[in-house]
Image 1 (cartoon, one colour):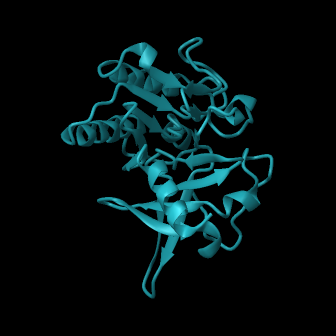
Image 2 (tube, one colour):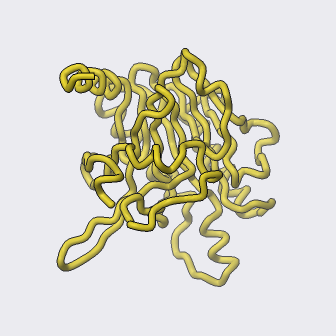
Length: 253
């Protein structure tokens, strides 16, 4: 494929979605996508004796409000919201975690019809606090949404052009002579003739797993995308005001 055709194809792909803070937005379809929330992470820290001054559920609601406001300010609408799994953190029933989860869900019901709040099951979602609302995978025409820890054959059908997932909590470490900082990032790449988009964790206090450390890698059973393939994915770093393109993972290690 020559460079002109490749550039035009990439532009066509990016015309269909945009990054809004830690979220992914499909403006034509009016769908907002959110990565791992891990509601209850702060409750787990409290149980371990770690003092945590803020409620992460309230932080999540505050961050969602900012994203909703930004999209609305641009004259765009959100009709549906999709959560890509690991919505909760504990692998067991936790009462305070459930209460926090329900607080976030009640907030969402002020903006969306319940059928337009899509909850996908992640590896942490061992209990459904809504009693049957969580699903394994969601397909919206040519877009497949899933957590990313299990393969579902539906995502490789011919009609699917985009596969959107979370699970890997991607971040990047940036260094200069004075300091080292870590930032959340999106990963975008091609795998099995589909455009895969990997979202960062929405969890405020955890940046993620750095993709540009020399030891970056994971058990091949951890993700549906082989490690060698994901090294060819492009990195989009989340800054204070916009998202910055940083090239391929393999060129940053």
